Length: 483
Length: 95
Image 1 (cartoon, chains in turn orange, purple):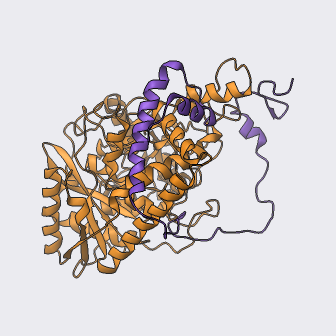
Image 2 (cartoon, chains in turn brown, green):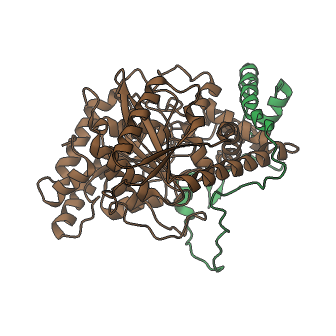
């Protein structure tokens, strides 16, 4: 059963060839057998999953099912789920039982999807390897000595290891696309504002965006259909009609203009990834696309600007964790300041504390213009680069990361080298444009990822292009050995 | 941009994060490394560029000033570290 895609399983459920209870039991058994090694889940909600599956079977029998009814999913553990622990991979929220449901997970409940549990992540989504979680690192099913990427590494490992059909992730600087690239998945970061952020614990509010992670573009289309849409509870949610993301999947790519940004194929890019993308370029040409070299001249400023904006917003967002209203509280505080300081020192891990401190510094008196304002000006330059590029081409094709998955422990003590792994993904978050990552090949058994970036609200077109590529390639059909 | 121990102690205080004597050298080195990375921004002239706060540059939505939410105090205080009679408890602030 777990060999099948979401679209195939949806058909099997609707035709009653399979029940959701059987399917859910199958996945729960796989999690029990295989997740001890991968550590992709923080919490498995077996009991409620089976209740949801039984309800889904009843809904299918009653004839009012959706494409997602009865499909076992997993959610990144920073989407609040009512009555369940929502930890954000942090000791700070180890005891946090969410009193409310996020909009994204509520939409999946309304669609009749099953939730198998909550997946591991870098603490508060701050990382690119899922090693900074309080619950230990997640392993990559393609090579368990290696990271699955991050921060949505638990979701990536769970989908790649066939421990759920598809999963939710969030992408602030590449946290859906980079792990998708490391695990041979298809993952989509929507346009900023397309998916509600309500109930998604905030890291950097002007960059955070939830999206789907699945095995195929077709599956991502089905997931995004549930997730996308206006939400009055999110002040930056965009009130625009949601198209049918599956309707155009089979459209022809004839005449499609694809841009290759020269800055993304310069020094530092792994040769195997570069070769895989060259081969993909040929496939796209055979499908009727025209290829053009373009330039994103300010791309190299993206990482410096991101590491001001994201920590600055994080330092503000994470000030709510004060040991008073919820979350971790230190023992025997001497006074209120001691309560704040020790609860935060003991509750947060090293990387989260570093980013809070960088952000605090950037926002402190006298430094605002030199850091935050400067970074916002660079953000405009990066957005302008994209807008100029989209005058010449329809989409941009580039790698998701400079190398395939690196080894666990390889970069964790050197934050700057870890930050540089997000060099190709961060620009899309700063500009707010959507991007889809998909597998482009393998080298020494490790997946190689590429991404397509499009103009605002071009998700349907991006999924169409990815789907067409997946009709003529089989990278996305490969499974890691033993899974 | 290189920080010294006094800078790090000040930042940690502003962030309300306790920092021990042992942690200061490594924290100072790592924060200085991150600030060196960030300082690459200063190479570009942005004097005529308008800052961008929101990628779509939309205007903040407004709504009528009406009560839309009900009181959830009991649900929210159920997960608080310490409460009494509907109040959150903290160490004594005023002697």
